[in-house]
Length: 365
Image (cartoon, rainbow, N blue to C red; front, side, top):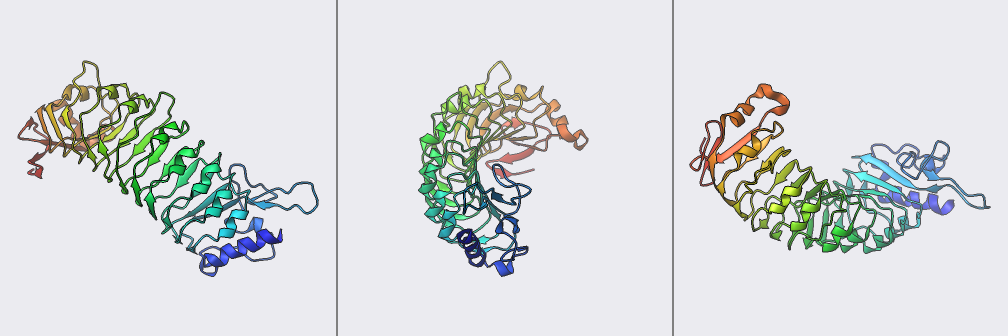
């Protein structure tokens, strides 16, 4: 339709189209459905004969409707989204990564009720994520990392019932992560590292959650680790480095079945690591807990029988104990996949013949 072609022309000029790396087809005689970045197939969109459009209906005057914009990475787009883009109500997929997008996201984009993926990482977009997206029931993937988004962490994310993957790292979001994020039963990956978030980590996770990767490094998160996160039977990667987290390591975390990477370094945690008879840490590949106030004996026996561990960074705590020769042997470069690459301790408190040594938080050997 004429209106659709006009909107795509607006997009072209708003994004400095003449300077794109690839602008094949744009503003040419062929249907806009076959222009570079529109042409293609995404979930629920596009086909061999319709390019990147949803096929027209049978009624008079209907037309193939644009349902995707996939400009790839670093195509040199520069500009702001025109608000008229909201009229493209069949939009299911947007990908503009590593470019020069700036300004804010217009609220009219909330009219994209069929949108499934919105990937705009590595740009310069500011403002917040429009609450008008709250009516979307299909949006599953959002990449906002490495932009200039700011303001209170958007509540609207918690209303996206189909959300599976959210990356919001390296922005300046503030405030708390809403407790309602725990209600997203499809959420698998949540990362909001390097913002200015504060408050407690949500603590309302039930056994139906699917979370695999939860990351809030380099924020101002405070309070204890959430007990109910132990219900996350699929959790593989928990990264909470460089916050203000206090309290001890919950014994309930023994219930983790899949945990591979645990980063709690540079916090204010204390107490003793769990000394259970069974192998509490079996399956861990990376345990990074330096610069806290953990005390008591380090349960080295839990790492004797597993060959998976790659990092043990324990220094700048108050733990005692002995690192065995069996674990030291794993530093051998010839071990390849089973090699231990990082082993750090407070050598004035933990006896070790092979460790990288610290004393009072300072590297000594």
